[in-house]
Image 1 (tube, rainbow, N blue to C red):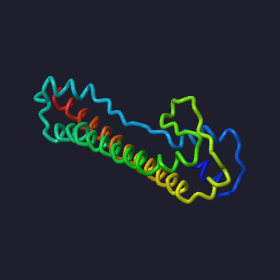
Image 2: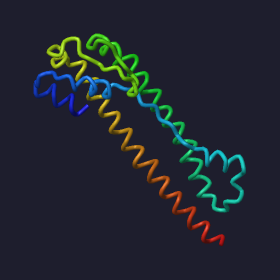
Image 3: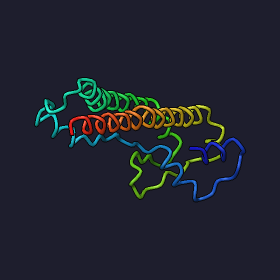
Length: 160
């Protein structure tokens, strides 16, 4: 997204390598929460954990945040398919919403695209969403997991 925005803002000419950047910028990534270990624990029962704070943190981290993550995906899907895709269809030879696709998005008219305010707004909005999404994952999920690991380590040492 940065490469494309830089290219458009500076009125740089089109080059073939941009096609992959257009594809990546408008690809849909779907969050996946790997919670197999947590599911095994809940199936077994959390009774072996005496500390209620840890139980609550685990439930919040894996249950509530997983649900929130899926809601974020739903919202972004609505934005993508209802707002972005109609504009992208008018700007590119095709849209490829999956980054793993070997297809490349090629602008129908690069000069017009560089002046298209709706397209730039979609690109900036997508970028802002992704930055917020990544920041939320780092701050909430990773910090939550680290805190949970520390509490579990303390609990294990206490029980030994």
